Amino acid sequence: TVMATIRDDQKPDEETHFLIVMRDLLVSSYQTGGSAGDAPPVEELTLNFEEAETIYRHKAATGEVQETRSGVNVCLGDGSVRFK
Image 1 (tube, rainbow, N blue to C red):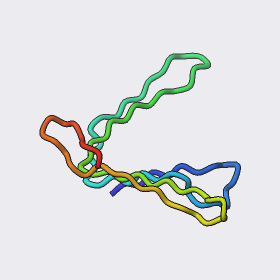
Image 2: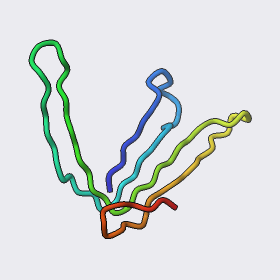
Image 3: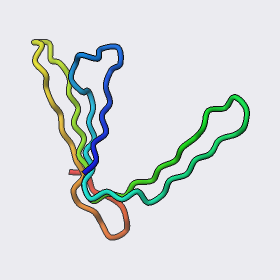
Image 4: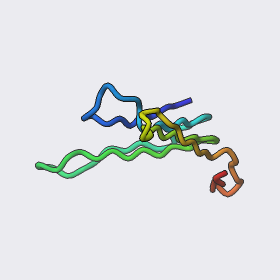
C-alpha cells in the first residue's frame, strides 16, 4: 500500500487536503532526464496498481472537516480501469 498526500504549505497545521491510497502497487518504470543548463531535472514514474482511492478533506462552513471519497477497484484485462 502506498499513500501520497497533498497539503497546503501555507497552512501546515491543517488536515491533509488530498490523499491518494494505492494497493498492490508496482513501479513499472522510472527515468530521469532533462537538459543541461538552468533547466530543472525531470523524473518520470510509471505506476501500476490494482486498487486506488482518493480522499478529499475540506472544512464546511460550520468549521467541521468533511471528507469526499472516490475509488477505482475493478481492473479490466486491457489495462483500463472502471471508476465506481
